Amino acid sequence: MFMEERQKDIVRRVNESGRILVSEIRELYQVSADCARRDLRVLESRGLLQRTHGGAIAIAPGGAFPSATYNPIDVQEPRPDYLAVARRALKHIEANEVIYITTSLVGYYMARDLPEDMPVTALVNSVTIAEALRKKMNVSVILLGGEMSHRGHCHDFYTIQMVKGIRIDKAFLSHAALSLDFGASIHDSAGVAFGRAVMESSSVNIGLYPSSKTGRHSVHSVCRMIDYDFVITDSNVSEDFLVQGRELGAVIEVADVKGEE
Image (tube, rainbow, N blue to C red; front, top):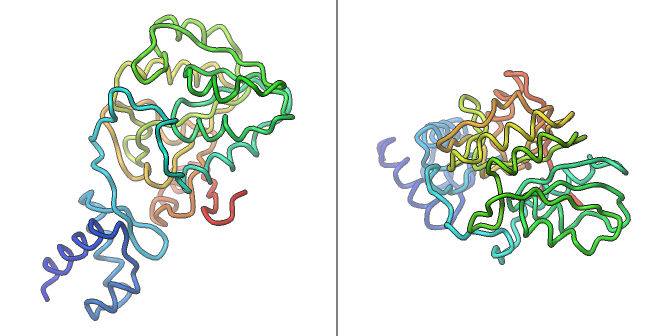
């Protein structure tokens, strides 16, 4: 089998099953481990899959826009990679801090699992995140308002003005994608100014990027990867992404998908 045929077949298998291991590639095509990893590097560079430790997984197209009414609470199946990142993020919260929690699914998991006895002030611009925190008696919730989108969050001029008037200890941010060259990026340009305003108001900025968001880019850049004080990802992340990100000067924590509690 020619290299092009092998790589095409690898992509087919990944799209059908959702993943493939280096050991499977070696057995299926009778090639070396180095050859298998090289195939995966080439295919990842073309945006056809995402490499992980020991193999690769399928990815959604980087330019795919979320539903106009998408809401994290609608996600029925638990996402282990998002949960791992959220739980690691919770370990960085200290009592009596003022924190910002991102509107994304990882932020929803953070809000849902924030310990009941943790006294903090939480800034949120999502009604879903606010609702997840509402009954936690030790949490003071500041809802950043403005014109609400159909996804249930605000990031317009009024929201930005509110966040500029508040000093944040730690901001937990997550956007659609994180790449080495384009940084953190999102689909909707309206969210760029808000994201930057949060970072300017915060003493510590923490990027939350499950491995499925890494090595990809969306449409509008919010910040460079090194603009975060540190980034949290999960153990399915590509080894190359870790190495190259750290070479750029980024501080990266890796949460174990299987062991993070």
